[in-house]
Length: 65
Image (cartoon, rainbow, N blue to C red; front, side):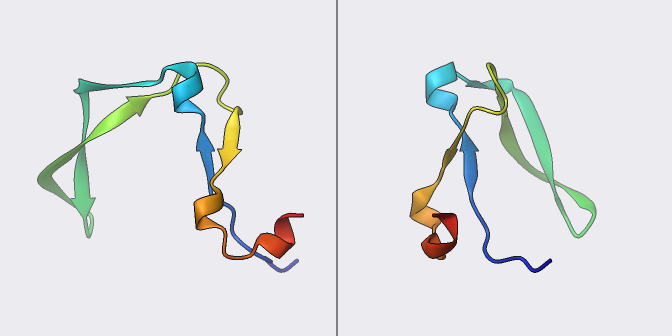
């Protein structure tokens, strides 16, 4: 089968009070090399399948009807 379009789905963090903790840090890799750059990791809570469709990123809305 062919891919018709891409959909951007996001977890409903605001509804589930997901948090980012300063202690949950993940180092960023560039070309398989660990850098000194780090990003905070979000701890998702609640139903992992409770998602919303990010309509701001919809370029092929006709395929989502």
